Image 1 (cartoon, each protein chain N blue to C red):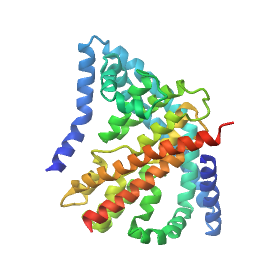
Image 2 (image 1 turned 180 degrees about the horizontal axis):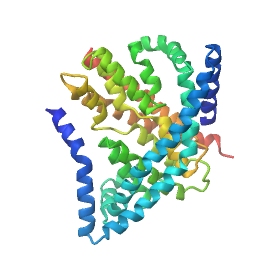
Image 3 (image 1 turned 120 degrees about the vertical axis):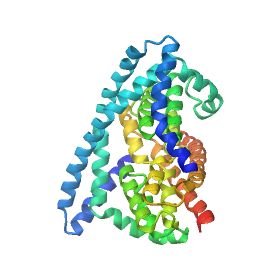
Image 4 (image 1 turned 90 degrees about the vertical axis):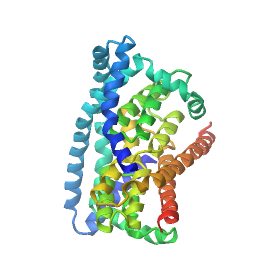
Length: 178
Length: 197
């Protein structure tokens, strides 16, 4: 039931915004097309400005992942995972999540299909995937778009939020689904 | 910190590849990733144009200002350094709303817009401001009411109850968000103390 509601909302969200924003704008006397084009112009320059930052970060992450260093890191923190009550299978997902959105989604999808969506691992992977974000990517792109190079404590803060989101996923899944 | 993390990712990767006797992997991975970076940027040009265009209409029609007025107390608490009625507030609100609704590809353009507005308030353009750090922490930990992608994957995998993870996901992201807001205040104070001359 809820599943139907949610899939309907995501089906309608964008058409609804495309319908109501221009309509409301027109009713309030906005020259909708002209104003749209003015706003859209900024899209190109912003996208181009983030390229160097994106390339720098993606290269480092790809080298780290493809070389096998990621796997090594996963093996290293595995003992800690057992202590906090996490099945070791989900560790690659936890490590990948802040680094690469596509990578994490791939791992989550793999876990869900390998262990089944209704297994503990499948549910935990789903909650973990939904509850945190690709911090590195977001920081790179957002700061890059305005040319900020010194992040101060932003990275620490973002990773702290990720870790607490992951731990909270673990806690709630252990309570509800074990 | 980002310098150290970046360097460590790169150097450990190369060392591990060398120890595995497969150093060519580094070459392929690096070249491919560089190309991916450009592809991502090209792909988001269209999205950026679409959403920034719509946002401009929403702004001129007063919709963004209306939204901003609704949540003003919260925003003033979170972003004390941003002046009342500054356009950054509107963009931040649009970004967070898009995140909450799970509209990932609309969130980015609004977020970049918010960063540009926040940068206008920045005296030292190379360095992040407190408001930027707060905004990014909220952005990456923001409550997602509809994790549509993962529900789609669960449906495809034949789950008997694909949406049962919605409640737990909201709980987990809310926890992350609360921690982020608290940690932001703590780190901000510590940073200010350490860098006072």
